[in-house]
Length: 126
Image (cartoon, rainbow, N blue to C red):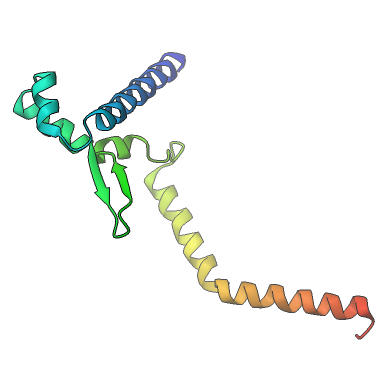
């Protein structure tokens, strides 16, 4: 058990280091990927992997964001604490039922109504 946890922690450190290096490369070379390929003497396959990992996205307002590769996003996704798929589905179904029975608009209205009744009671109106 301890060795497994140690290996997982080691993998996470490696991934964090990899992400940091990718960020540094992206900042250093900006959009000049061909120069990076020449400087680092990368093969075409390595270049393809690296360029996918350093994807940038520009929004309509001109804001540039770095989007990590699908693989690294999957690695950093929230852990489900080892629950089985059936248990996850069961939790999702329960959440959906709860949301249907008490939708957001109804919750807000109920809260507002209770607040108004409480205020009236404090003022001695009812």
